[in-house]
Image 1 (cartoon, rainbow, N blue to C red):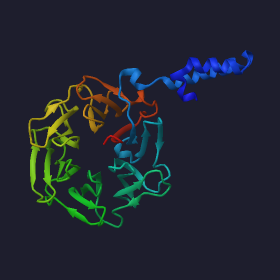
Image 2 (tube, rainbow, N blue to C red):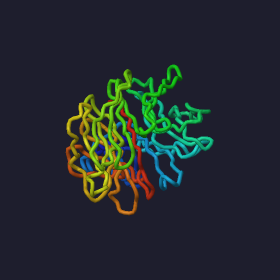
Image 3 (cartoon, helix red, strand yellow):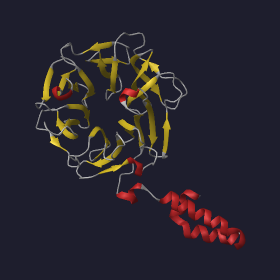
Image 4 (cartoon, helix red, strand yellow):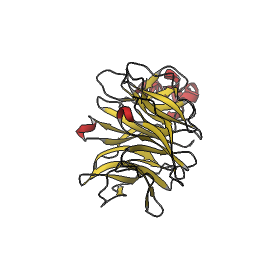
Length: 334
């Protein structure tokens, strides 16, 4: 009954006063009013932020070199934040990605002093499954295909695919003079967009899953371009340094066709923005260093707007004095 107080609060209070003596009803009324005001406030009333029905995964660490990353899941519908990795027997868990049905995540972590890929069924007490156990390879940056059958990832600096139906691994690139990373499937799962190179020598390339043909998409001189994330059949987000003289990371719209990239309007020249995570056609979640001396925090932005808003407006414990990065979202609308 308390959850419907905002719909018929007057009738409910009158009904209660008819049943209970006035000297006993006052404490109850104060309690009901307190609950009403606490439960009725929504983010949409706060800053016109979207109401999200889904789960957000992200990792938190002191610094990358500290090797202390932990995985968290925030449930928007129930306003619950959980550290899902605290009782696992593996360490430095990071870069989670949801399966299309939202029932599991894949991520990278360290087991026996080696980076491996893991699969974890949500809402279970089981330990995550090590998909690459016993290998001598360094395995990182896993992402599900849109049909949920494959995981693409970085394997010793090359792009590989793990088939969840056959448990077979296929390596798509064989260019050990370059380092590939951060792969992500196109919407039809026929191509993989990824970063090639490192630092100012990095670029964004497209790899055909069937033919393994590589196509260069974005490669500005002395610009770091990385972390592509598909969000439509023809476009993806990616991060890049602002210019040759300004090393601040900014977020861009990229095109699978190779059309000129477009900087998103909420970018600011005085702090980093990266790790885009699409919500829908208009909204995205990202990491930014907007708060000085606080590392990366999670924010939400309207892709057509000029400002970003902290996810602390949804839950005050999402952001901390550590770094929050690698957001992945699953919603019923996908």
